[in-house]
Length: 405
Picture 1 (tube, rainbow, N blue to C red):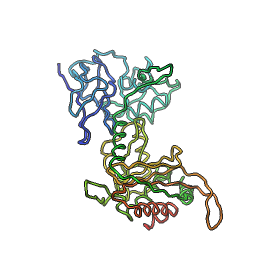
Picture 2: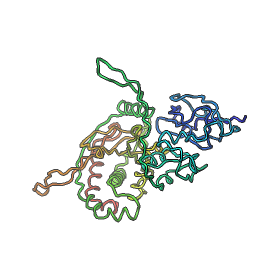
Picture 3: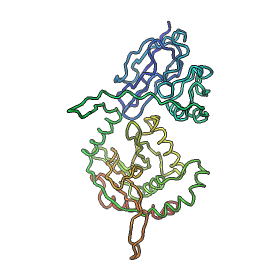
């Protein structure tokens, strides 16, 4: 018998503990090296725990839902045992959890392959069984690229197994359901309360005519996508406009540390992204040095990996200023909450046609309301208002961004 221990991955210094989600294997089942056994949820990201060796899972030390820390033993694998201990034709648990059950005939060339969570989701949506896909990853693992390249089968995809709901109870005939907050949701709640308690938050508003940006986007949209492989959206223009304003008014890019003000000489812009597990804010590092295409590419990548729980701790750590886009959900106006230790955040909203007065005439223009919340402890109203005006001017005349005006 040769026992190999499955350990909790190394967590970052800012994360003291994590929560185990759901085991994908049971004791006595065969596992392959690098096969994902369980996922570990921290207050920022979800980490996959792969099998360190092939063999048979002999013991699960920590059950689903357990709170764990770096380096703790989760399970033990007997790497000397043969795979025959587990049913040979059984599909890998990781694939069963997120993909349709494989037909008996599928237990051929890809029966032992394991799909990553992102790949399993794509295969499920395309109606492709994991057993019919040749994995190119380590140990034959099916990667996201393999799943995207796979051809759909004629058979319709089966409905994935539903997650068992939390126990429900009825009060006077009216049903209720109590579920625990995820670690990420609990952390978001904690930080928002901290922000409101520790910052003197004030919000200033302005409106911006988006016609120039919309005309520019319409003119170059198709060529841009063909050239850069990503759609030309609006967020990159807001990021560029924010950076231009932060350069003019550096205190908007600063943070408070005790009784000191830290002025950052770089521009790391956090972009709020919704995910199934809650709000996350990945960071565009050195946004002032990124092109419009690079910003759009990174934001698209953030959105995909946030949905799949693949963002790393490093990608969500730091940041000097944040942008939250409630407009994608139809929000007309809001007061965003500062993401500490930052001192300001820009909220953008849905662009709608509205009557406005230009040169004494009422005309219809695509208008967007901007809202910037700021920490009044270090940012005066003058800098906040002028900073938002600078963003407005950059968006209404986007050529200024190219000329650095």
